[in-house]
Image (cartoon, rainbow, N blue to C red; front, top):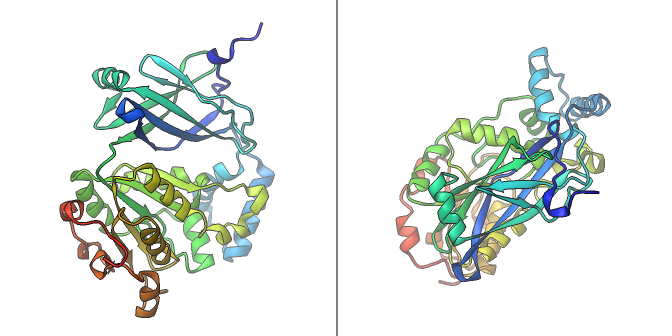
Length: 361
């Protein structure tokens, strides 16, 4: 007889599971916590035909030929673009002594999603046994035989009030050169990721004051692993990641650049709606449309945005005309441009205690 639904998971020891850092929020009047879980299940190995095709597209688009030394880095960057994904897998997570089975099986692209709900009493027990520390909860992925895999996810349990820093990634904390297609492809697939000098130190100061971080980017989820490694190596504070779904067979490499600007506003808007009493600091750059997007969000979600910081890029500066349109109706004191992180305030206490940014305020 088949095993009952609630007692099984389909994750094999050979599967590679990536679960993305996430957040939890209070529900039921503070009696419970809801944690949204997202991830991907891949088969072991890769498809050499797709790898060769991707390499040809990269060479054609960027007009470059990877050196022998770059091939290893290139293969690691494309691994999650070309690795076969697992469809129909049910994922189970152990939290303390309890097992939670996610509500939905993996889709055709290997992606899965679900929620874990915990009571305040359960959290007290998790805190006592070490699974919950500093507001960060650790959840372990289980294999089909019931044993614990090497994969896990951290969830930051955020209270209703506090400061959340929403940070763009490309050309805000990571040197990317989004304005140039060849340079973008080369920096994405053939170079070690380089963080913007001084941003990690500034973010650590903000984190030490209790700020939570949410890294939001139009980069595809397949680049999560190297992006997370760059953040770890650069000393950036822990935070949830919010990237973009991308299927190689749907878009091909040549369309990767065309979808980079979409989807970020919806992610940030949903964060604000999930935490209506938190104050948000939005950090981006002038290279794409961060200024315009942040301005629209501040006008739409009045009373939630405390400050907007835009890093200026020489390739696409934020001139007076563009700034006036982007931040129309917002108080000038709540918007600041910068070239060096040292120009930004290191203490967010004033922002946390100040009046929220109101249109026409």
